[in-house]
Length: 105
Image (cartoon, rainbow, N blue to C red; front, side, top):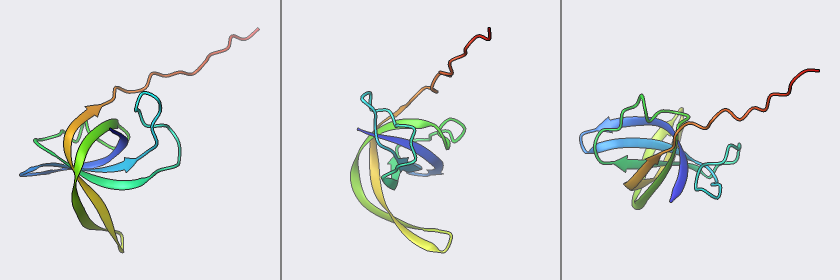
């Protein structure tokens, strides 16, 4: 399973395409909050995934198999994305606010 961040979903007749930013995982298979990435990939998931729910900044764990590649342009650059077929997608709940408050004396 791979931990990922959604960039933006795109609905198609055969399902929903997700552009995903791959991040390293913690021990629970959740994406680590860091600047290091392993690049982007595209995942094709069956059915409709609501863009209001599956949007940039939300974390998922995704299991799938490689279908091939998908070519797209990012600005003026042609980018070749690995293309995966979703077998399972887990949308993580938002992280709780873990700020520590210190009382003033």
